[in-house]
Length: 300
Length: 269
Image (cartoon, rainbow over all chains, first blue to last red; front, top):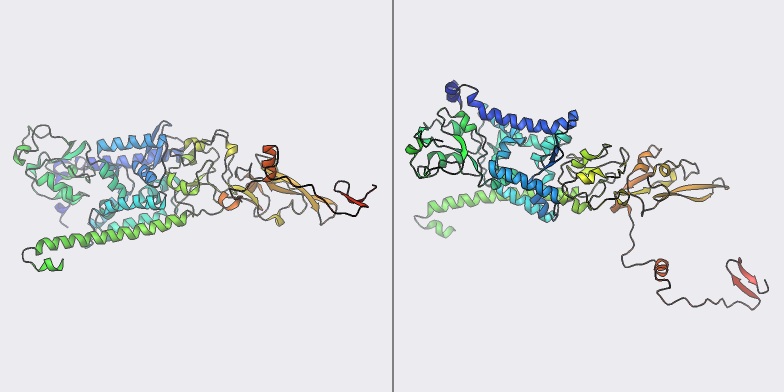
């Protein structure tokens, strides 16, 4: 493998290692510190957040509840009480602003595992021909609702790796590591970005939640793009890049709800094509050609 | 579809449609099979192991599966570390709270912090008096091995019961082994037992003779349309059915019958 062939090499050379890993580092920091906040209670007796990702109480005042769980509970025929509803609204509002799938890349512990599987897969040069459509996750989302309705219980929680991983770290895993191992191996050998990018109904739910989210990655400087493909290689949802990056008549905003706002494309782009911004175009730059969009005056 | 395939010019569109339908069919089949598995597993996990007891105020098992968020706030709220969240493979629905009375029983806090902490209502906030909790029901399962049944005065389950003399009483019966002593049988009263499990926890035997079981297993129930005649009579002040006629014994004139006077008597007595 040629040294300059790995994605981000050029960015490191031009911007320095730290700048080329800025968002990745921040993201890991976010994932780990959220885990740490949950853990200092049971480990050190300092209770900042009690509970787990399903539902929690911060500093004994702020309730947070997974809105997806509330929907499943409703489908199963239970109307959760006020605290849960308030907690769910707060979470829903938050992700409505920062992008639903920011949960996946900035909070969810399974992401650490699947990112690792992806790194390993790339490093070992593994290829597999499994063609799993990305919309399968929405079928999964639908299925979880249907099982909740039919079985009269939140059945998805019996096997949900996301909550199981998080709960396992805080309350003890049991056999949950088997499911996590299965996901790791699936991502490593069977399907590239298989779980998070194709199957996970939690991510599917949050993508719907963030369909109109305010915070977006923008490719305002897309005219600078030299087609090095580094962003495609690191992006967990490659299909979201093209419309913003290459569509001459479309907005430079990555509008797909499946973008996880991980910011890795910003990191690895040596030419600083991408940046975080809001979904709305200030001027009429959405109509302008890529050449105009690249001019410094419109680059936000 | 096969007929349209033969038309020239439509082949390409048909191909992509076929591919799409095939792909959709495949993933939908996979998802359906998976859901089927999860559904079956959820049915199976709805049957709790008999030694797993839910926290106070827990809704019926069926509703509980729909209501519990598996967040563990009740576990954290419990000052006695009684509760635990079920792990995958535990037999109890994964992530839901339970306790094992033999290990750590419920101490029946007056302020019921676990119920207060529950965000979803799976532990019903309507429960304000812990004495009204019905986590399970204690049953003297193996009375032959109970020390009291053998005529000893162990009495531990009775003594530790938070509702002593209401939930557990000692009922005297003759000790036929010695012929002259009484046996003090621990007797559980379902109308007062909260299912806290302190009796099971403290039973001195190697294996507890008295155990707390989920209500579904332990509790008998009269058909809803049945009434206890004597209770209804007392409530109403008089019999609700046609009163019994005065009983006649058709005895010879020299005899009469009086129960309290010890039965069959001579007329003159």
